Amino acid sequence: MVEVTNEQEDKLKKQMENQEVQELKVDEEAVEETVQEENVSDDATVNNTTVNNAVEEDTVSEKEAAQDGEAEEQDNAPKKKKGSSKKPRKDKKDEKIEELNDRLMRNLAEFENFRNRSEREKSAMFEIGAKSVIEKMLPVVDNLERGFDGLSDEERETPFVKGIEAVYKQLQTVFEELGVTPIEAVGQEFDPNLHNAVMHDEDDSEESNKVIEEFQKGYLYKDSVVRHSMVKVLN
Image (tube, rainbow, N blue to C red; front, side):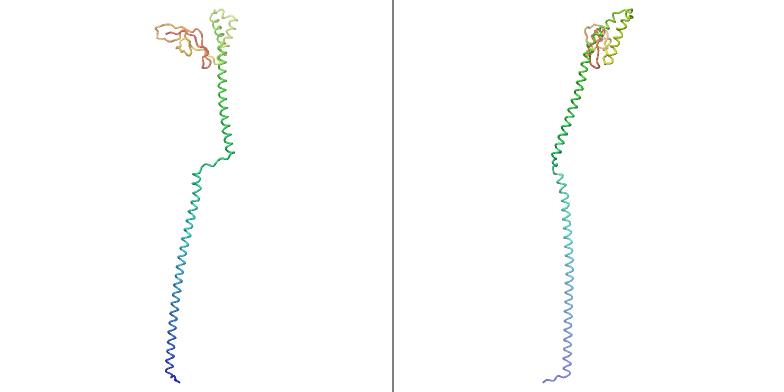
């Protein structure tokens, strides 16, 4: 049996302590490497998280932009459709109302034209009738005027002649109220629209184409001729 001396025991103890110290150092280095690896992994995780968050934010912004674009397209789409689309078809009831309204307006216009035409025709018929009556009364006036021209001054003072003269003046008043006026002839320039030349007289004076004598008085009813004046014209 080998006996161990004290010196050998001391050497063994020192060797064992050194070995334990080295093992502790190795363990500490291993722990530090582990911690560094964990820190690196944590940093990588943090970086990955940041990148992921940035990517997610970009994705969200792109989605929002896409949604906004789709919303704008949807807003613009009805407008384009509205601008390019045809007019909506009218309801049958509205079409019937418009048809009846148009027919009513046409009937009113036709009735207005008929009323105006009837008024003109009535006025024309009245004028024709009035002219016919006046034309028939003119010979009576002519005979009264011829009778007055053949009377002497003494005969004009008799009650009978004064009575006839009052009737003649009354006829003249009625003619004026109706719009019947005598046509001026003597001394006027000859107008074929108003005068009827039955005789001509030759003269070298400057007063040519003048009416110098009236054989029968002419009359106007308003603006139309009832009877032309029968005259003698100087050529």
